[in-house]
Image (cartoon, rainbow, N blue to C red):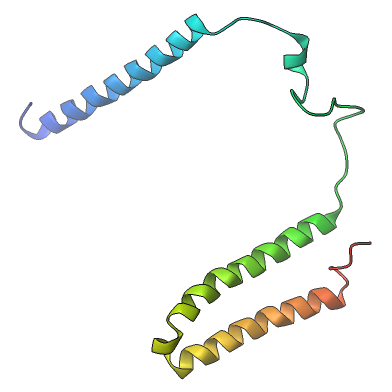
Length: 122
């Protein structure tokens, strides 16, 4: 092992070079042994499932994104709620009040979404 200040850098350079050599070797081996069968089906948009029909452009309703956003909000609520419930006995009244405020804010958001009819599918 090389000693001194630059010895550590030399060791690092050696392992980085070995890493690059290993990556280049495996990619080269893959190029040598992989089958070279070219078919038209490989160049379609979808290789499996239903054959693509029509153009590739289609509009998506904004409701899908709103449902996704609401899911994320309430999923994050669950992430905060479960650890709090595990140590509820040790936290005391202040933590209970804080969690009630947290759930209240989320309930207000849900009520707002309900009132704006975001949750209606049709």
